[in-house]
Length: 299
Image 1 (cartoon, helix red, strand yellow):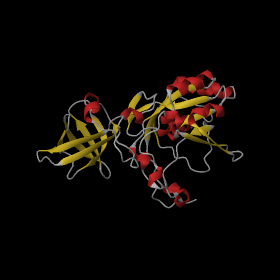
Image 2 (cartoon, rainbow, N blue to C red; image 1 turned 135 degrees about the vertical axis):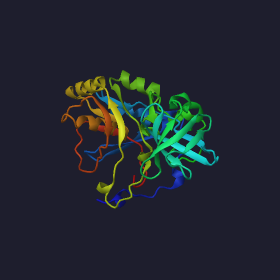
Image 3 (cartoon, rainbow, N blue to C red; image 1 turned 90 degrees about the vertical axis):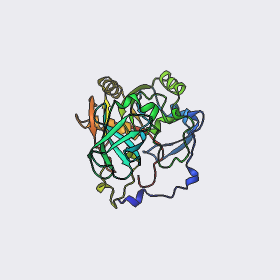
Image 4 (tube, rainbow, N blue to C red; image 1 turned 30 degrees about the vertical axis):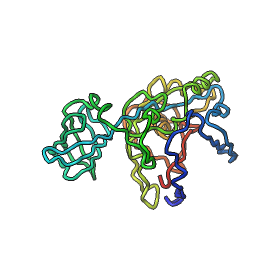
């Protein structure tokens, strides 16, 4: 197996630059792996492929406006700070743009406080410490970092959030969940599908292409995730009754499979970083079905 096996031609005009309304009017393709049968439908009809007792697992992370524009002190040179991972309320691991952003350099965030580069990591990554907690200014000074294939500015930023986004911390949306509406979730619940959630904060590394010739040589990124005891109990209970675990998005898959690693086939509560890398031949311990969007070539 080579990375080239996951490459394909993707015409740019095939990539939608604005979302459909309503959210659940997107097209849905269902693949039955046992038979290879493919069914075409509309996303709002996803309930036709689920049954009472199944458990639908959502990732309730919320995208933060993680892109900050700044000027170096005292030169005024432009700088850009892309928040990646929180260390504490004022300190973040970030990807920086601009010349000479070495430890000790101070910048003034546009619409925010002063900040200092306190350490260098690999490449353009830095540890940046702000004069005040990021939560105090992020919603007014920050900008939503869009995927590299979206070229139009967001007219309505909430459309890049799932309707169930609760826990702030992602640099990118768990896009498989963008197709759900409150009405669709209510309909699935009325149908007998149990709905629960996990949290995995998505990093921008999710867009990084695989450049190695062999996929197994790729260094997969690490992300923080959490699966609560209540969610673990709901999933284990459903499985004992014959219900299937339906993960919405690869982020939910990664969280569930990371939790399952701890105790064999059972799901355990889990909180921490995961570097789980799923390759062909992997035996899934927790997930029976997955909802996902199409993925970029070589990603």
